[in-house]
Length: 492
Image 1 (tube, rainbow, N blue to C red):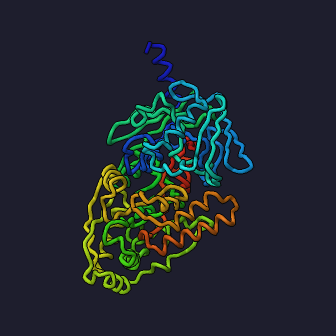
Image 2: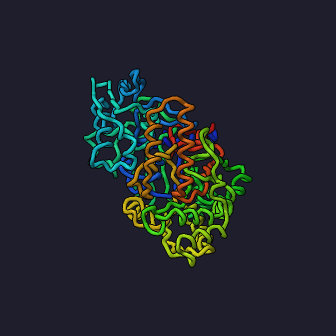
Image 3: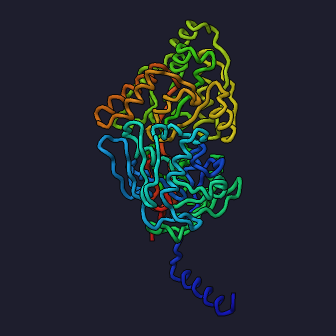
């Protein structure tokens, strides 16, 4: 830097200081979990979408903070009269972060890759009804379905359905190249990921020039970092007991909302003795949901009796089917041939609700004779041994994908529930477009899995956010796992 440049820069800085006009254009956001990698199309980790959804990668459609589905890379679409052909018109002038133009061939590549036989997409079932994807011209894509699917536009908004380019696919896990408002800059393993504003973004330029995601796994450390103002926000704060302290401090704002996260005691339905419905029912009656919510979440959370969000219009309250009744639990265990109970494992990933809730659940199960050995695992281990390897008895996890009851129609899903009646219901749902019919099917589906006691249904995870008082645009609710940087700005 030359002398004149230095003097000018210093003078400008002094002027800003004198006027109190420091214009903050960056943000540091705390995350409890570090992503295993940065490819949202090949893993079930919420932390990936928290960083890259809409920020780095975009889909044909996308979710907004209110849960609505709006156009993304597709500016419009037409649906054939029989509901089986969707013709998407892509936006003009969209380019990937490496400068290459987005075209219909990239969309075809992405959707074909997601639904391919060797696909590692965690939500591959979203694409199973697609029979073909054709690039009609550079800006037009035609998706043909085997039969009508009223959920297609919703499914295409998931992070698992983002559009990627074949040229950058080999390095996608560590150097993601998308079309979003922010570009990937740096990943310091174990510490942080940094994104920078994309000057060539097709849409409106976001207010913030950069964003850093800081990984802080320990709830006590998260509290200390927030209080010291080392970070600007913690989108899902892991220590709910500290929220009153933040709420009373004018430096901060507390956002309490809802998520799509059904927190469940996931059960390996094919592993004895969990292949016996009486054992699963016994566990359901051994669990005191409110005690778990109070003890692990300090009262934040809504009890659930099935895998469905209570804020959804089609929700049916079935908590009474698995009410807390230890004596009934013991009787069911005796009837199933386990009068003295049995031993199993309880794998707990590093989230606070899992670790804290797991201690309470283990104690409640022990009270009826089920001795669950707690095995604390890191996220990558959980994905490998539990989710992919199905090597577990019990685990506690929050399923944060939106309206994902359809996972129960997949016999090879990690809790290995195989029900032909349920699978038929999901087939009917996918081919139905009438709202009242869909609601009736969804409610019947909730009843089926509640009556089969597939998993222990604990509570709907609350969204507990803490941020500096001047930060605007954070989602209060979480219709999907995302931190939408384009919505953020600092109050002047």
